[in-house]
Each structure stands twice: as structure tokens, then as C-alpha cells.
Image 1 (tube, helix red, strand yellow):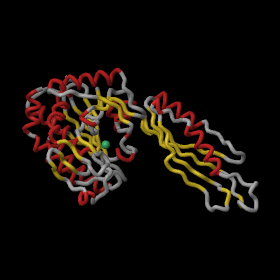
Image 2 (cartoon, protein in one colour; image 1 turned 180 degrees about the vertical axis):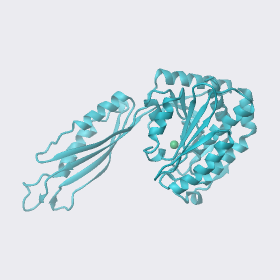
Image 3 (cartoon, protein in one colour; image 1 turned 90 degrees about the vertical axis):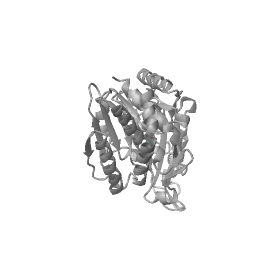
Image 4 (cartoon, protein in one colour; image 1 turned 135 degrees about the vertical axis):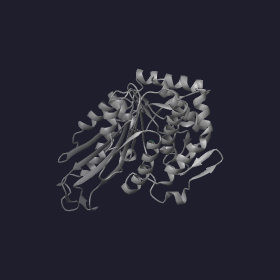
Length: 375
Ligand SMILES: [Zn+2]
């Protein structure tokens, strides 16, 4: 383990350079041309590292990259994304730069540094001649917008893997994510009957009044002690003050820690029924990302990572995250998944986004050591 850490420490400059190269190639999820520019450079890096790279072409999103590093036995999967939430031009007002131990810039922490760590780990293993299992890396381009075009590949690759190591940012201080809530989005549309509010006030059926009553019901789905949160985040409806509203809509964000809780909230939404006469409801949506639960297999995987960390002189924490990642999908497939193995830092999706440069060597060595444990 010590020789892996020594290598990662000695080659820290190369890891930083990889991050900088990827961050300079801005890659907002919705800009295919920009994401593909970043992907082309990343594909080259992967080939130079010895991988067979498949570019998985997409019509509207950036092309996903799948890199296979040959070896004996069942592969271990590295999973992450190289799209970011930052529009082109963000570098001008949020420049890439070093400030003491911090490397700032859009997409550093979430999660181009995670990709650089994966490459550093593979290089350390190669140069030290350390035996490892085969590795499949999947770097996707639409994680920040729901993974619509990557999910099928994520699921398929996960099914063939012994475990999935997700290179998303760590929790504060470097802790791993052993649980993530499932994320749901529901859209409630209320259909009413329009009428003149002054001339025929008794005739219509107000979609807005009905929506208000439904929101009071939906609010009670929230159960914070059980970790279930429900937020009616968007509402719209009606046409004019003097018209009884014909239609109204609400979009609701829901988070739940377990499959059971997610199913219960989902069925509560499906069983909403009209309260005021003359109105009708349409309910759409569901849980896009199922919960990532802390199963026995996840606990075992974390214990392994923790052992590797101690041999590197580090104590590894764990925690749960309210937000989802592609790790939610691989966990739902039933493959042991460990998330938050990427960089230590802060400010994902925020102006102060940065990574802690001093933590990069031990994070890369942790990944390398964890891989070796699958031999
Ligand atoms: Zn991310």
C-alpha cells in the first residue's frame, strides 16, 4: 500500500494537470459539442492509460465513454460523469486557479477531479506492477440532468461487475457515501371548469382552489423523522383574476431513504382524488432515482475501504446524502456500490467549488488499494 501512496504523492503534479485539462474544457450537460470536446480529450487519456475505449454515440447529449482495462476475473466498475452544471464562459468569472492547498474552478469537485483520481490509481498500479482485477470505467455526460441517455448502459455494466465505485465528491472531510436518498418528482395537474367569476360564480369548478386543497394533503406525506421530505416547489395555473381557473399545476420534489418509503409515497400520490366537485386530477412522475440503501454488501465494501484507508494512515468516515447520483441506479440493480470516492473539497454546484490538492494522493491510493482487494 505504501508504494502506491508513494507513487501518487510523487506524481501529484500530473494528477493536478489532468484535472486542469478537463476543467478548461467546459462541458455543460446540454451543450453536446462542448461535452464532446472534453470527451475526446478524456478518451485519449484513457487510451494512453492502456484502456480499450468505446465512444457511445448520442444524438442530443455528449457521447458517453466506456473504458475497459483488461485483467482476470470479474471487473470492478468505476462510475462518474464529465458533464457539469456550469454554462460555457463560467471560467471567465470563476477561473481555474490554485489558492494554497485548494484548486478552484467549475467542475473541479463535481467531478473532474474524481476522473483524474481514477486515472492516477490505474497508473500507480501499472507502474508498481501490482495485480488488479479488470476495470470498466463508465464516464457519462448527462448525470446532472437525470441520466436519461446513460441509465441503460450504467445498469448493464453494473450487472457485470463485482462492485461499483462511484467517483462523485466525498462528504465533508473525505467521508464516503454509503446511502443516498431516492429522488422523485411528481406533477399534479388539476382540471376544473372555467366560469365568469362575477356573472356565474357558482357555475365553475376552480382548479386553483382544488390544487390548494390537494397541496394541504400532499404536505402530510412528509415525514422528516423517517427521512421523507416533500416539497411543492412549483405551482402555476389560472388565466385571469375574474375567471374561475380551468387548470392548475404543481411540481413536487420528494426524497425517501428506502425503497419501502419511496413506494409508500408513490402510492399515496397515485391515490389522490378530487376534493371539490367538478374537478379532475392527473398525476404523473415518480422516483427517477431509487434510494441507495446501506445493505450488508455495502457495509462490507465500506469496511474494506476503511481498512485500506487505515493502512494509508487515514480514518475513513461514512454518511448518507440527500441528493442522488448514478450510484442510486447501480445500487438498485443489486450491485454493491460505494459512492463519494472522489475528491475531498467543497462547493459542488456553487461559486466556491474547489478540491483539496493535498488529499489527492491518498484518495488515489485508496482507490488503487480498494481495487487490489478484489483480486
Ligand atoms: Zn456529480
